Amino acid sequence: MASSMSDLFPAQRVSPPTTDDYVYPPLPKALEGVNFDLASSLRDSKLQEHPANRLQARQEALNKSLDYLKQQQSHFMGFQANQKMSFDELNDFLNVHINNIGDPFVEGTCTTNTKFMERAVLDYYASLWNANWPHKSALLGDEEGNSYWGFLLTMGSTEGNMYALWNARDYLGGKILLMESGGDTKKAAAPRLVYRQAAVPPNAKPRQGAQLHSQNAPTSFDTHYSFAKATRLIAIPTFGVVGEEKYPGMCPITQDGKWPDEVPSYEEGPEDGTIHTQSLAELVLFFARRGHPIFVNLNYGTTFKGAYDSVVKAMAALMPIFQFYGHDKRVIDAGGKESVRTGFWIHVDGALGAAYIPYLKLAAEEGCKFEDGDAVEVAPEFDFSLDAVHSISMSGHKWMGAPIPCGLFMSKRRYQINPPSNPIYTGTPDTTFAGSRNGLSAVFYWSYISKHTLKQHIDKAVNCQGMARFIYNTMKELGKKLKLDLWVARSPLSLTVRFRQLNHDLVLKYSLSNETLVVNGVQRLYSHVFAMEHVTKELVLMLVEDVMKLGHKAFKDLSDGIAGGIDGLATAMDAPLVSCVPFQSRGFTGN
Ligand SMILES: *Cc1c(COP(=O)(O)O)cnc(C)c1O
Image 1 (cartoon, rainbow, N blue to C red):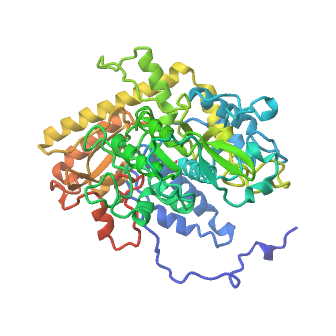
Image 2: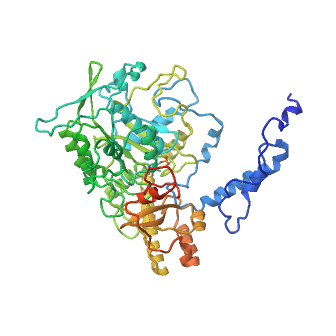
């Protein structure tokens, strides 16, 4: 029996607060009819006090927290997260510690895992993305390493993107592959290996001192902000950094030869957000000629504009360059053994798009139509049916909808790097990013996939597209009624519609995300909404009604934009912050 003493909070042993004032940020203003002060409710249930003193306050705080979340959820429109979900059947899973630590295809000794579900989920996406499945080891006859490999993420696509960069860095840098290691992890610690390029045609222009150690990471302007973080974390210099350092004044895509940080994204017009294939090709040519291995990230659904890079078009432009300069088959001298690899890595960041465009493609092929009779358009290919694609990442909470962030990374066995260690402790190879891995998300995925028919998946994809069209038309109408140009825009096939930024209260009411975009040399403040599954016409019309009530006061800024922004860098330069990472069009969070 515990003594009553041990139940008491040992006030003399822990630090008291330095102030009684509530110093943390306030929550969004309560909406009409739902009037509560969550902050003080939480404060009254002080976690430092004896539980008996807070029983009532505790229940109240929980109730209010849930009320708060439900209220915000019911208006949620600005982020690409599906708020419609029904996982009640999984309640009992919440009281088990589920941990998929280590490789999904090796059980290990942490047996409360759901790798059996994880593998089924991975197989499902492997089939959807035209990868070679099921996953097979060399023992099962996959000697070439053609079969897929992947794992469910504990974060969202951010983790998948980081893992892709890490994998690419070591693959391109000549680290021993898993297939080559014979199970010896010590080999991973081998120093960087020297490579020579194979089969450079005799008429090739001379390479000017191949840079063996610098992977370049061309990414596009509309790349997710997680890439800025990932390239820094994984220490891969972007082409802009390498260019400025080693080839100053020589950038092939700018007039003054200065190196931009990212590849421009205006393929189909000034605002569309897809990678500019011609610029990408010129940059790749510049570095491929000089022997640099190259990492290219293509976006399959950019965060703010929801634009789809055409992976097919990009590869059509890049493959001849890679082939000409021997980047399609580089021979790595791995301590006397030859290892033939590509000198490039193509990653598809399909955070949102990879999860649903395959269904939209099926819809288009079956001749599905929208309510107004328009045909569903075909989306550009992005998956493993394109041999050049090395890896794909996808978020689980975006299209599927999940109570927690989650996601999926997929690549091929032949690209896997020998993990740095092989802990006996877990009994499963340490091939993933984290140690402990979220095993609950495998259950969410499995439940979701197994519950739906293919027709339901297709209908959902078509309905969300239809909703994006509805939002676009509705916002256009709204602009006419208000006699104000709302700058309404929607990139092709995108689930998001962007328009003139709304005022602070509306932004919080509808959880809108905002971004500064540069249009025709002028900086404009935008909000956007995402037509995720839970978004109904009623919700859209509620937003419209709120705007109508306020008229022009519903908007943050009525000017035609802020002149002077040339390329989006201006904002970053003027900011007193120490970051030199440009943030044009990257935002997932508000600014
Ligand atoms: C959302 C998003 C990410 C990051 O995904 P998280 O799930 O937030 O980690 C990466 N890339 C793109 C294009 C995204 O839209």
